[in-house]
Image (tube, rainbow, N blue to C red; front, side):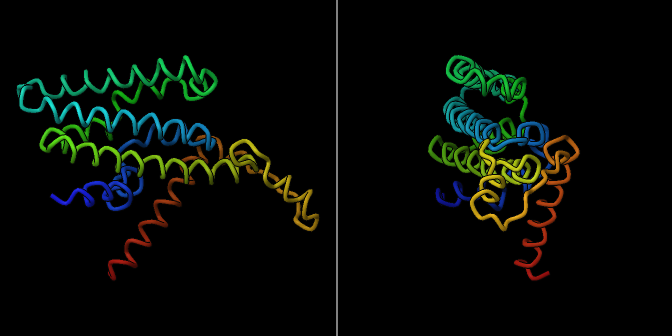
Length: 209
C-alpha cells in the first residue's frame, strides 16, 4: 500500500468540499463566515476524523457487519463529545460562535463516509493517514472559503481590518466598502459556487478535455 498516496488524496483529488461537494456542505456554509470559525471547525473535524478512523480500523474485525454503522456512530460521537466539551471548557467564545455545528459532526457525511469506505477495510496506519489527509484537505477548503468571505464581506482577516490598515498606511488605496451579503447565507453559496467552478475549470484544463 502506498501510504503517501492515501494521505495526499484528501488534499486535492478527493477533497471533501471541492472534489466531492455533496459531503460536508452544511457545516461548511455555516462556519465559514470568518477565518477563526473556519479553522476551529476544520481542527475539530480533523481530530474526529483521525481518531475515529483509527478506532474503527482497530475494531473492524470484531464488529458484526449488521450493526457496523451504529457502532461507527458511537465511536464518532465519543470523539465529538470530547471536542465539544473541550471547546466549551477552554474556548467558550469559539464554541458559542460555532454552536450546534460541533455536535453535528456526529452526522457529518465526511466522517462516517471515511469510516465506512476506508477505515473499516484497512489497517490502522493507513486509516490514520486517510483521516489526516481528509481532515487537512477539509480544513484547507474551509480556510480558503472563510478567507474570501471574511475579506470581501467584512474587510477583515482573522478579525483584523486589513483594508482600513492598508488605506491608512498607503493613503492612495481607496477605502473598501465590504459587501455584507458575502458573510450571509447567500454569500456562502455564491463563494462556494465560484470556487467549485474555478477548481472544476482547473481540473478540466489539467485533464486536457
